[in-house]
Length: 353
Image (tube, rainbow, N blue to C red; front, side, top):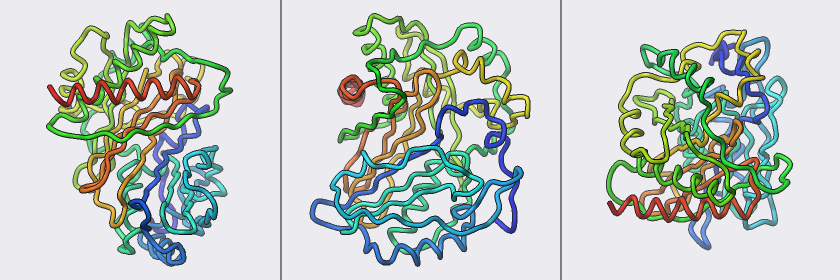
């Protein structure tokens, strides 16, 4: 990173400041095993911070500046780290953009990173480096794109005029996030498209139960990085009666990316009052299958933001388990579990077709 690196305009000017913008991952060993010895983590993190200084960066004056790596927190007494994940806002001026927790017995390792610094693929590389002890190039910075041109202005204007319907909020959760996971079985092709269709149907069913309309579904679909570049995403608007999977597949093949990935002016921060009208209904992110040393399962929780604040994540381990997750901010635990159960059931049906 050198002494300083200019921050992407998204980090400086994105109008959505209600979200904490924290991506979370939990890597687990097989039952009774361990994925690493916790005492080696400090030295591995130091090695990684030398080769990839962003891990120790601080955001100051519009630039990332090299500083000290984060302090690793060792957790002595918990079998499930999800309830204790540090998902609160980062102070990027004084705090490294990644938080690391590990169980004292080495059975799990958790990363929580700020999305303005890292995307999901970069976090996988960080995780693999910490688990295996082999430093990787983690220069992948979230929100970058090699695409030559942004999407036209019309989709943004149309979304402002005809906003996507949100997932109906439930209960009095007070903005507290709910994270749930299920184990699923994968087969066949077009996994991301079929997953998107399943998740869309799940939130439509949720809104029907709540007697709230779902006329337009806005979906952001993550697109995996290529040749070491960071992941991007595509955004589509569909009706519930349209072939969601086919439309997602078409969008994934398009080189056009959302405009904010190419440029985001300073004036974008003034858009906060209308951010709700531009929000997606759901976000869907499939990280694919990732070999991570002794890791048997990886639970992945993308950022849940906007009016709906509902995000689905999928990732698998070759020879290990595949995890489907949902993360919500305005929905109570019972309804969040129901949405994930519906998505998992619909996904299984989609995979059979």
